[in-house]
Length: 206
Image 1 (cartoon, rainbow, N blue to C red):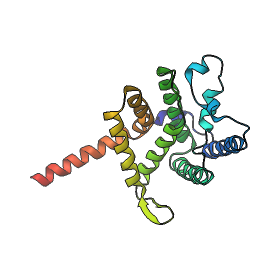
Image 2 (cartoon, one colour):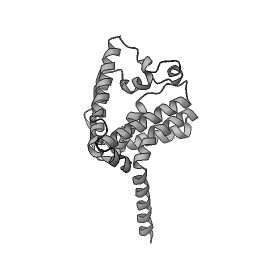
Image 3 (spheres, rainbow, N blue to C red):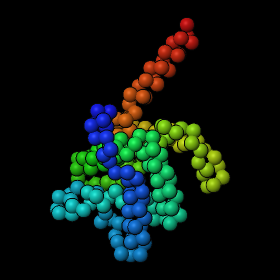
Image 4 (cartoon, rainbow, N blue to C red):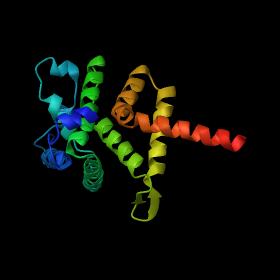
């Protein structure tokens, strides 16, 4: 990735999170006004193979909720996290992170051609990446309860773990797909932290 970044320095779409948010807001208004059936945006490979090619792109812009207030906060939170990641990594690396999430989600959906894939897994990977880089960032649940984002990320990981243990094979595939780009980007750092923790435990045990 470092080599690619040096080779394609300056490449990438700046403020790509803003375009995604604006697209989701536009389609929310279209769906709310009755001019759009959101089900026609879902990524269903069997339908793509029948000629509904727009689903390959449209599913990225599916609104995060049907509720106006949750759409507002969902889009705001996604924009805030995505902008922070782009500011930390730069446009190129952040674009690659999103592209990996997109490609892996689409690829997995073709393994399960009769199921509908949404952008929720891409959004979840952005959330986990943000929590990894900014673990002490505090959000206020219901505008009252302060919670550090690392604890919400921990709950997310626990939920993924439960899904891997109790879910069907298609659930497991989607869970692995949803964290694949995260693991590609942070795998080395996670491995280093584990080894560092093991060394500290060994030294303390002596």
